[in-house]
Amino acid sequence: MRVAFIVEYDGTDYAGWQIQKNDITVQEKIEQALLTLGKGHITVFGAGRTDSGVHAKGQCGHFDIESNIPAEKFAFILNSCLPRDIRVKKSWEAEGDFHCRFSAKGKRYIYRIVNAPHASALMNRFTMHVPEKLDVDLMRVAAEEIKGTHDFAAFCAAGSSVKTTVRTVSRLDVEKENDIISIIVEGNGFLYNMVRIIAGTLIEVGKGKKTPRQVKEIVEGKVRKEAGMTADAKGLTMDEVFY
Image (cartoon, rainbow, N blue to C red; front, side, top):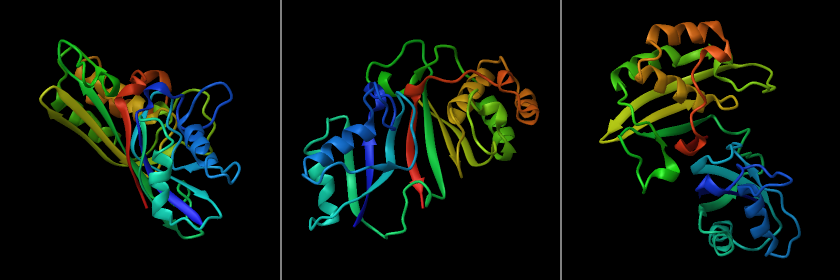
């Protein structure tokens, strides 16, 4: 049967989702947990390849297994073997043609910033600290220039190999609650480091280093070096995958 699951993880101590030769990853930890079932190696697939240090609240995955165990029980089995910073929130039996990555219609990411003179001890692992006061209203105006269907080449890390850099950002909101600024991004797909570059660009707008008009020109110009910095990985969380 095909077992699908939702997994939450603190990505601080992991080199991202995807298995790598010399680093510890989330996929590796889940596959190691499945080894305890005595079925041999079982490959686990993920909806997105979160980068080193990036977190997930709603990463979706799946694996195929021959077993009489009810699919919903795999969440409990995996959590009994996984480290505490990785938790499977639920598991279920999916249709045979379901694929956590290719069946996805879109994703939501949230980038969080502590905008205060001093960083937060409790939120430090999950936020980027920006001590300069950010103009949230200007960031919202600039966000409107990014939202929509565009060639996002300016917001793609160098060296990325994709067939097209055209993507649709259906939602890009900038919200503020006390000292926490949240940049909420939804779209049908994302380029390598795209959300972190969007966040970095909006932060520069908030600091007054870029204007909303310049952001519009950056989108149209499609040149990476014109966009903002790649914001810290620890501020990014994959919030939900849509099917």
